[in-house]
Amino acid sequence: MFLKLLSYDIRAGIFGRLKSFIFPICVYVFAFIDYMLHTRFYVKMGKPPVFGRNLGDALLYIYGGMREYDPTVEIRFVFPALWMLMYLLLAYIVLYYPYRDLEENGQNILVRTGGRGLWWLSKCAWNVLHVSLYFLLGWGVTALGCVIAGVPLTMNITPNVNMLFDMFGTGMRHPEELVLETLLLPLLVMAATCLAQMALSLFIKPIFSYMVMVEMLVASEYYLNPFLLGNYAMPIRSARMIEEGVRFGMGCAICAGIIGVSVAAGLIRFQKYDILSRENG
Image 1: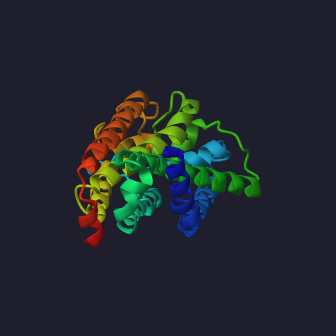
Image 2: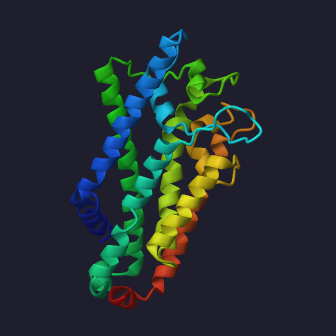
Image 3: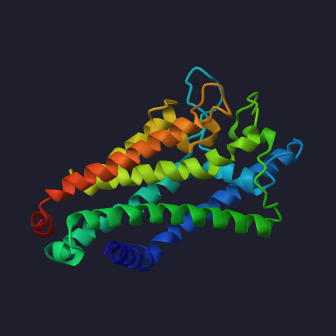
């Protein structure tokens, strides 16, 4: 029964909503173009082209985030609009499908699923699959851009890539080790974020749960704190990049904890959830 439910959610919640990926594709295309223009700017300024010329550097540029905000430093503060937009889009895309499915199928949900728990677990699996597909799409668009632009499809992140983030004087001891922070951690952070958002929607209205996630991401941009989840979705704030940065292992552990708590809390809450009230409301 679980596989039947998950198959339905994939058909209705992913393939039935393919139009929702159009704008994210445009954002990824724009982000890659911005990356190419930024690297070419440094080359024209006389900087040696030893960075920004492979797939790993491109992905780090797109998912990197920004250095920690420090009002005492005179370096210009640049708000990471593209980074924020990519994650806000993802959180919004997965926001309403479970809510609408519950509204439309409220009276039949127990009969169709054989239990509330299976319905909730199916939605959790759908959520993680949707997040994974979103990132696969971003990686694919970036790789295609590299092919078109003649950029090597390697993940060898170059030592001086920190210059692209205006982090002058900040060296990376092991830049090649940022690959997992660039590929895996952002995906885990958003899987945890979107599951927490979905679980929270069982307690408050979906739009309010979305606002909570927005506030968390905004706070993460301004404060480098290991308990603000968004920091782990910024590879340039990794401990491998800066001394006071966040650690990969702790990020994985926190994400796993949030995922587990979100699934369990939602499962418990949904057992006593008033489906008819939600459907009529």
